[in-house]
Image (tube, rainbow, N blue to C red):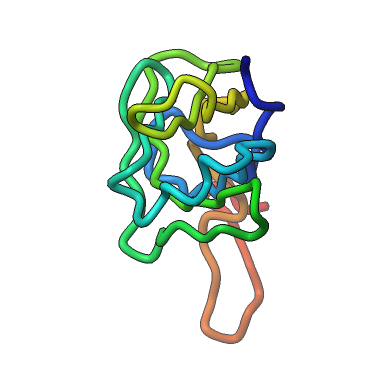
Length: 127
């Protein structure tokens, strides 16, 4: 048995990692009562274990769901990455989710590249 897919917000982040992500796992039934802290959970993403954020205290929103906030690990590739949230020692309290990694944009130039104190602008080319 595998619980329904988890919800994840936001559903995408930078390949550099470091994004704060919240996962809510649904349909865990009575296993949710075994969750006392984030130490009781294993969260993996992009083949790495993700760590709960200091404020990512697990909350049991209902009697069958659990929510945890974590820091997304870095990922070497872009695109969809399979993630999972599971309760240690349980064969049924496990939820899958998808998180999309992207390469963050890089600013290489901008125009105008000069400005005066009074706000009028010119570029190096005199535009």
